[in-house]
Length: 176
View 1 (cartoon, rainbow, N blue to C red):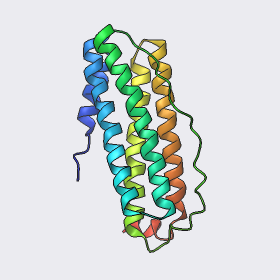
View 2: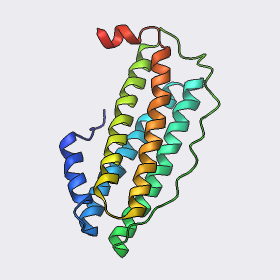
View 3: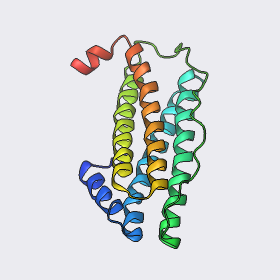
């Protein structure tokens, strides 16, 4: 399993981003790139495990959205490094996939449920991090960009929550 980003790293990144120094902010934004890359890797691996099912399409959808976020964050980081400027890169739409029949999400799929719960936690972590950035930066464009990213992650969390709630065993898994 890949290394996950800890709260101390997130706190340090928030300090760097809010420092007012473009070079330091770019370093802090590097953590956002790691968050998105971690999500892409996770969702892609889950899609491979679920080959030929509705879950595969769902995880591919999430991986593709995270790829879009990665590209936008990378453009922002490059602008800070090269120009010292905050920009508001465009993000693709927030459309929900049309794969929500949940026919492949049976109660016997504890590994799938564990993946959903892990993803839900990671999406919540990303949402809170992006909300923290939006609060800490002074630039209006950057605030809007990170608010939009936080909303995307919140939407992902809502979809994941919906699946977790549909699981017959989610209560037993959480409560032990």
